Length: 120
Image (cartoon, rainbow, N blue to C red; front, top):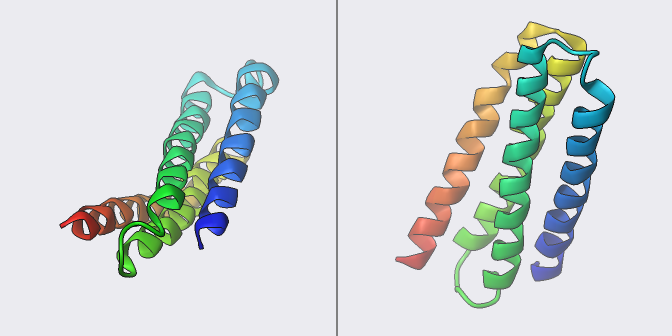
């Protein structure tokens, strides 16, 4: 499992840097400032949680129980749902996608809560 979260974190970081560059250089001037800010929020949270996945990989074999693994999967789900919905919202303008974003936010919160509980 440690390797799985290391791979997930590394891929999320790679994609986050690529999307950040794409947003800064490819989307500037094509999106409104508000939609560009939405896209950048997706990138920022993806990068935060890419780092969190690397921490989960480091902790996966050191802290017993399932909570660390649950945190990792919740971070993955949060990246897909939160950041992914923001990317799609910004690029397509389909506002209903904004309804998915809070589900990803809850996944992020639940992941952090699992890490808190795992340390207790």
